[in-house]
Length: 333
Image (cartoon, rainbow, N blue to C red; front, side, top):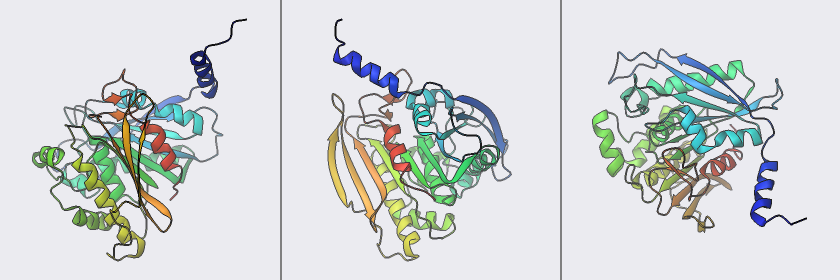
């Protein structure tokens, strides 16, 4: 019998590692009275969602929940296919919630992160937060392990949710997004994408801490950014790090005393075999990594390590979904 080639063996091993049974989808919607937008007050404050339920989770056993916020010109199905987050959900036993933006709320399917209501935790941020609460009442969700991740406009909305709803989320992942308070109107949003946010990061970090209730809740954040991104410039990733370093500094002991700061405690360069190299920076305090940053060389505006059969995915970068889940799994609320 002819021996199998190494590539065939690797493919067979991958198939064996994948779950035998795929999960199922359930659809819903949520409305919030706090969900009205300032710049579009006639837009009804309700959004649809898709929820992925992996097979094999015991009915009454609480499981983690990951909220995935798509970018502009995307929808839940395309985002799920591109990121392949559901495969990780099958393997590790967590639920995945995909809120949906529609052209009725934004012509490009972008989340309205730049709206003044959202910037204070209302608007679409309130709708998504309420969506999480509604899902947690209907399904066995471990409330200590609820996480949020987003790409581009979804990453910008993730910044707001991490800032203003820190009690709800145990950690956040911002991929090719912008910082909290980067813009507060449609007219300043484009400038923020190109040049960074108009609010100084230290000020935005203090505002984020206040928006979350000025409490003692740390907000661990993983930031992923392509260095060749011309849609959302890399300057924004640096600002995100600074904002959440400031927020975590205040959450640490209630004082602005640099106990957590935006000076990396470690840095290293790694590479995907046959793919892109990337810089990894960690920002730790008290023996705990609160912020982790990935800068992917040569990558444009795309989900790192995603399925290129879907738009806005780059297969040559490190697997962002795997990196995000690994980071999330280390943090509980």
